[in-house]
Image (cartoon, rainbow, N blue to C red):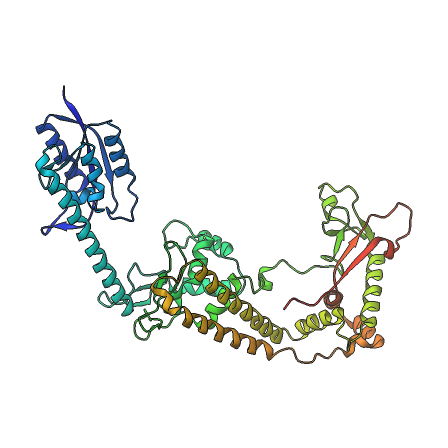
Length: 496
């Protein structure tokens, strides 16, 4: 009766004696030929297109060994010892001790022959040593290339390889698209929206399939777009600027090639981190009525919409459930809220750090000096980002990321992050000067300003001091009494 044998194939680009190692097809043909010549029938062919080194999981190899150990098949053929494993003698000794038959065709070794045991073990050790040496050489070569600023992989999106010898980068055909990504992100457009726009415009993505928000985020955070060599501190982790032996960052750009402007990178990253709100052009349109967007139904918590001459619970208006839908005559509730606003503003003490007046001052400055306010906001955002960078360094160190060779750079990284934080704090301290609030301390001036204001300005003025007005449902036939039906949530200072 013919015995069965399994074949294990592994493909690699490693050459042997100046000839490329056999392909899957060639290995299988050779294995079947050996089986025919030795009275075996091939039961199953296992194939891995993966490294045989220690840090790689090879599912088909594991299954092939499992079948052999479970006596599902009496023998396993492999083209060569280094195709089998490069983990050393430990990969073959257990099989030899169990009396399992392993055939290495290239070396003409067969564990069925006791005289081949020592040679099989030696070949396994030689394969491990060769692989270890090769890995060290590859790592040393890559380290040297990184030190020289050579980009090791495929050119990042937006770039192309300028010189195949130096592997420095220059702007590629997709550079304008990359700049568009940074500009849109800095302006407050979400990564998801950008990705959808690119897909709609049929702009090819880096992977040639479709754009996704995560792709946009990776680009925004990529050190290469600042011109720096990048490295991942752990497999699958985020990329950080590579540091050479002196602890310095290394440029990967060819002479004369400029990275994405530093200010644009900074603003885009602050936006991604959530420190900069969505830009006005990406927000919904402004409300049309004085209290639209401020009124809330006490029953369902939803907003209100104008229905005839009244503000009415929006959910109820569109047929959604609300057990006690609020409704109030527009003229009556607007007059009530305005009167309460005016009274609260005039009652507040300008000189006593009243929370309401601090909030009014902040919002008045934003309304009347938008450019200055934007600069202040960005300065505060930079402080938050710098604080977050320090926290991330501490978290990474706690996680052991800086336990290895990168550990020697940790003190410098912390020092740089602290310098950034101090600079951001100093910049933020430049703002916050006195704000002229005389208007809000004089009833005649405030009344005159209100009367002279158009609808848009009145909406803005009301929102200086009010965040929300919660309205309950009124009783049929009972007149509107604002104190009984309305709860006003007054403005509070912005968090530092």
